[in-house]
Length: 245
Image (cartoon, rainbow, N blue to C red; front, side, top):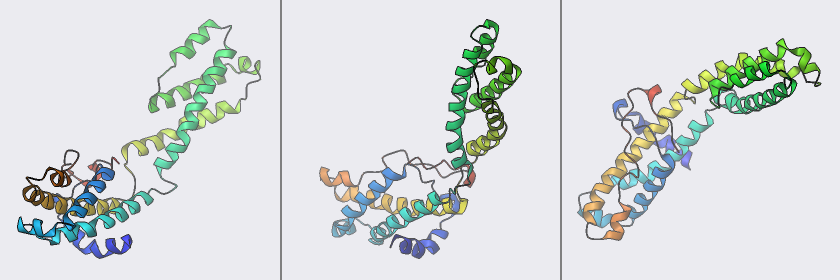
């Protein structure tokens, strides 16, 4: 049903000027707020109409909510299994774990070589992603240069090859993961337009709801504004902030 709502709404969403499209941030919280507003307004149509509300806004919000949920699902599904985000998520943990193992292995192999222990200690780059990748490369090089000491502890030399490969290949994946928000941009745009459609309807309902129920604290609570600061329209599509839900 939600897909049908979205398909029916696509022509309307396409007419929203790009300059007015709001990036869909805090989506989980906003969907709860939109649903509360839709239910409260639908049950109080007469009072809201008397306050000056165009009742079409209620219907717009009721239609927009399932469409927004569907659009969000489409955007999430656009992160396919080959995306840099998925690759980084699966390989980064392996890389951090390998770094920890190499630190331990080299420290044991070099336990009688204070000068080499100092070198290992000096390689500590902290827990940043870029630091981990650099340290992994340096540990692999140091281990290869002292293969005799590693052989004495029956060290698995394939770890050095793996570390070298990861340190060589993972930076490109990390860069794409870090600088590219990912996902299909058309799906993101559709999601943001659906969010804008709902947000505008909710804002209009709230303005009239606050007036209609200005003396009713319980009802007034149902027509509160956004839980978070209203996001500003993005300067451009790729620079739009990610979904913070």
